[in-house]
Length: 215
Image 1 (tube, rainbow, N blue to C red):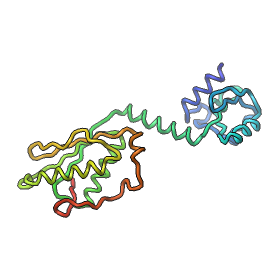
Image 2 (cartoon, rainbow, N blue to C red):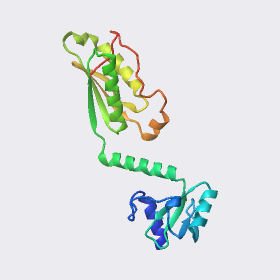
Image 3 (cartoon, helix red, strand yellow):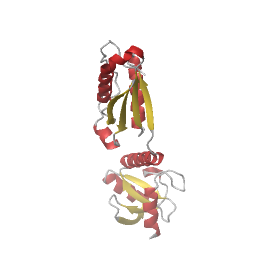
Image 4 (cartoon, one colour):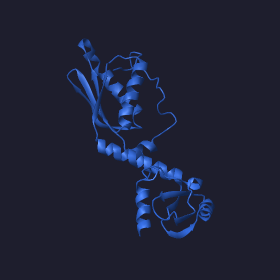
């Protein structure tokens, strides 16, 4: 029973093996015999390392040492690349939940050059991908207030550009000399579904003045 509990515990704490802080795989394992667990969690017993490697090869899987301190050590048949990716993704999601969601602010002006807009878009995208909400504010000064409709058009453009990583948490609202809007991050699964080769490429759409909004 100790070996079984040790195996599952080591699998759950991937990357934190007490022996060497990493899981050894395949030919890196130097034990002569191992207790082998198949890909479905079934016990295959204690066998020679050469036989365990042969089983892994036949199944096109990796032999992964998951309990190096047990006697004999415990190994499991895994798709190691997929296993490592899932563990990394889980740690990242846990870290985001522990950190909590904060709200960032990005400011725009009604007239901004194209390059400035791309910088702001990248900044908002980074915040959203980090799991933060983003409050977007456009400020008008003096006679610029007559161009609020242009501001709403700019915010509509932002929503389109950021649809792959964020959703509208609060629609654009005019409040005095400001237009405010809030974006919320999409769940990681939705972000992955919306990924496309064109993400992150500069967009050449211009506003009514031939410029693009800035901060």
